[in-house]
Each structure stands twice: as C-alpha cells, then as structure tokens.
Image 1: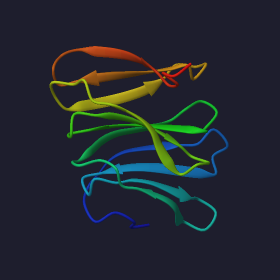
Image 2: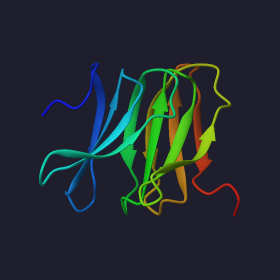
Image 3: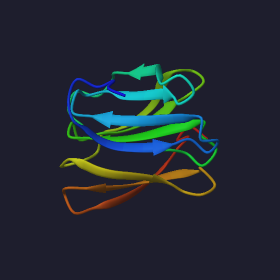
Image 4: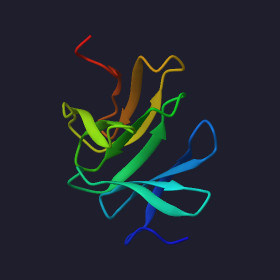
Length: 122
C-alpha cells in the first residue's frame, strides 16, 4: 500500500482498527481505511516533515508533530485542523494523548516535554 510520496515516519491504528493514520516527509497526515486501503483524509496543514502521528483513545482526534515546529490537533469528523501549538524552539518528535483525551503530550528537539490541552477554549 503506497499512499505517500516521501518516507513515512509514523503510523497509528484507530481504536476500532478500521483506520490507519500516517505521518510523512511529504508534509501530510493521511488517514487510510483498512477495509479498502483508500485514503479517506489527506490533511495538509504542516509546512515540513511530519515526525509523529497518533489517534486519541476514542479516535475522534489525531495529534501530529512536525519539523515545522508545531503540534497540531485534527478533528477526524470535521476533517480539519482544530488547533495548532507553535510555541516550539525545535522539531516536535513525538505526540501522545492522555487516556481521557483532555491533553496531548509532545516531546521536542529543544529537550522540553509539553502537556497541552486538546480543547484550549474550554
């Protein structure tokens, strides 16, 4: 299954094992339906390589970290980026959701770990 035009750096399965998310050096976050292996979402808001992707525990959100020094939160149903954290001095290497999906942790090349709210407006 080839859906990216550059190396894939990160993958994760949805909680129901029906979807796969990829993060790639082609600057995209792609969601692939495993049933037919077709791309159902092509998220293109990053400006550099995507290093890490992760579904939230309920698979309603996707977190992504990139060489563009941002961590993004994507709404799977709305098919859009709902928040961008850009207070990074380096590449965002890894992202992981809290089990209750209230926050996302990110590890960065600047040697800092950040815990960020998934819905900062609330």
